[in-house]
Image 1 (tube, rainbow, N blue to C red):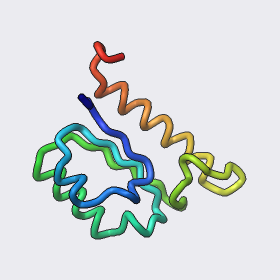
Image 2 (tube, rainbow, N blue to C red):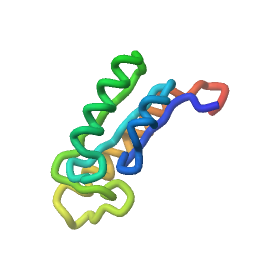
Image 3 (cartoon, rainbow, N blue to C red):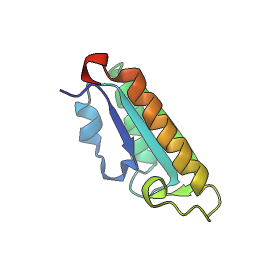
Length: 102
């Protein structure tokens, strides 16, 4: 059983993924990601809000898809995005994972 989800680079998610979501979800979204477009972002927000599911959406300005896992520290903003993304995911898991499963 899952207690929560944290997604970095939500490019491969679909509307159906959010339609089926029933647990707290965190989304770490780089500004530049052609697959996770405005329409999918809107669907994400509308769906999760209508289902009253706890969620955390983090927008990372001036970085593109893959910045969290293949970020280039020499590029402006990417080192910061990697650090902020890691810290956000760790904090999310600490908040939502049940002590018995840790």
